Image (cartoon, rainbow, N blue to C red; front, side, top):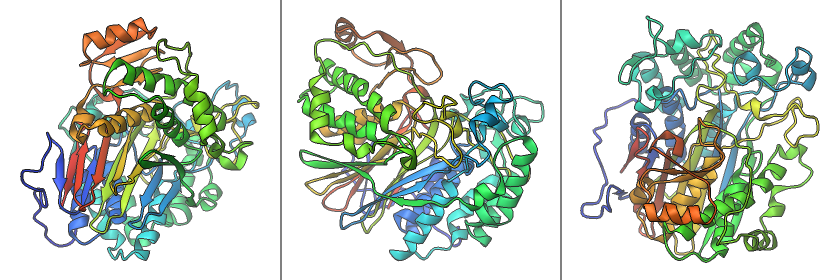
Length: 540
């Protein structure tokens, strides 16, 4: 960053902390890696707004958490203006023009390969989302140049950052171009936690974008280099696919409940599922936090929400029915009425896994951002493009080669996304920005975090409490109810009596990296991030 800034815990209000939750006087950020939080805090201190802070954070987290996100992936923004309007920025790329069913079936593939060049079949949309966000930031008074927003990320990529604890726990051996050369050390071994890793080519790419503008990623030198390398390694993506891509301004999904309004992202994300879960739960009139009723109701709501998600959440340009059709009182009442509070429903669940980052920011004016960025599985496709250092996502594997499938592969189609950033606006004036990583676990962890806060926990307590995931836990093939260690044994026994097939698992990444910020009526901001990650909350 240009200039010199001395920032410790500026703005924290003495005596107003609840547990480990920070309370900041005017602005705050939350991120899963401290370097990203520091970038956001510095941009806010320079006079930047929440949108500018998030662009800088998104760039830094791509360097600090390369196993979970990067500029070769997608990103989704929810933004609430101080006067109440909520905007959705869609930074999601579509499949290549060459990505037809025959492109995969003729060589003998029954499914799209999960790793390697054939998994890299969708245009990375995250950078276009940054551009749309920066264009918007200027309309609300943002004046910081792009080179200032990206400077931390460029410096960290050149000088290096220590491998985080989270990254050190994710060590898949991926046969893909450039993967071993990038992520293994000179001995051909995984870098240990704390060992410095650098991304020189990626630093050059970010530096080029800082000077030439973000659109260069799709139309300029960066696009040309990426398209050439993708062609050479065997991906269906071509330069014309990049030229045709642009981020879109979308209408968010909205669900009004008693005392509050929830917002989430529309298809192709699973934001619908997140809203359906809190909507059904609200109608079950649960009164005790972390009781068997609380967990049972959320699990059973998940079982009702996911089939609707699988039916309705696809590229809206290809949809036969809109997701908004399910967000009405009649549907939610019907689904909630089908939940038996005494007995778990049978429900085999095909699950999606995914690695992601969520980050939040709220500035002094009251602009609130909920942002999520991902390359899908850990390290995405595994392909590192030699000319730019970009790690390509594998989000396209969520397409099906079955021509009858809801999310069937077609050219220029957006894939289904587990990503979904969340916002909630309370009738009393509070604004909550929250979210998590974790594939199918995202709607479930969001619901646990929100309901615990709504029951009266502060954010730190809500984030630290043990979690559950119904369906396949990340990295496992189980379709049981996974309980993170720390639940009361009597609660576990009661859930078992209701018919839940329970597996107990140690605390860790599998249960998501969540975070949240809440701006109260006085403008003070409560902020916290997951102790399971490597970050935290900072502010002014």
